Length: 328
Image (cartoon, rainbow, N blue to C red; front, side, top):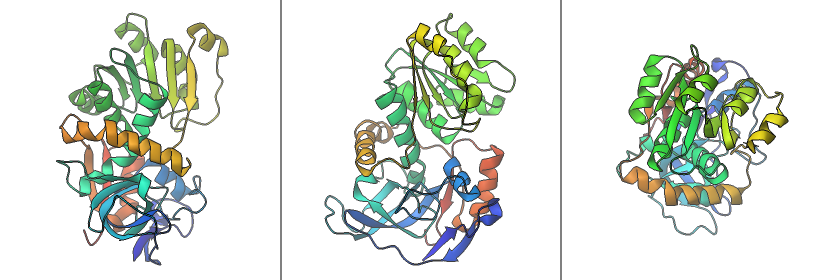
């Protein structure tokens, strides 16, 4: 088969479409013929040499895929050859074939094209596990979503609105904010021109956000704590603004607030399986019902992954960038 490989870390040109050995599904795994994968910030970090796959995972980038099952490993039940699926991966999405733990597979939701389904597993699992399983967002509460026009952000807006929350977002520029508004965002903040702490304070009569979903990290840490409501919960899932920041514990104590930080890729199989089961139970019916949908900015040939990474790094996209396998 062919895959996007990374012979040496570097810029987008470091991604090389090359022939590699076919994967063999192990115990509890299925073999998926890939139709599409999606580009994530973690793939960019891996290409740069900063985010290696967990031990035993595929060395190729790609944290999600959609395709058809072509083989079953020992001990697999509940799936059949020919099933159309999408899956959460620890790596290997930028390939023609990938072995996936059966517990990390999902059926393609009703009403979603197979190729578009690759836009769903990583964002659905990330948002549901952090905003709902960890931060426990409830109806009537206010959630602040940083990077509202990103793949994570567009999914978070839709899910938060679906449960009856009030949604605030930060994004760069009027076009991105307009798209966030179309998806249901109530409070629109241009982080290039506005102070999100002050804008949120005014929009909530001084209360702040009950939940904040943050992809920035250190750069926003102090302001995020100031933007939290009493009993607020800050969920950090990215470090685009740095890894080390100063945490004002006095402010945290005065608000009886909580800060959590999680990643998805390196979690144990049992935890990923539990998250995927929760996504299938809670998110998939919303997609099948048309309440939530994948937001795809563009599709590109998988062999052109370097150009897809350039688009990702330019932040000119809204939603997800998909890579289409040659045989799709």
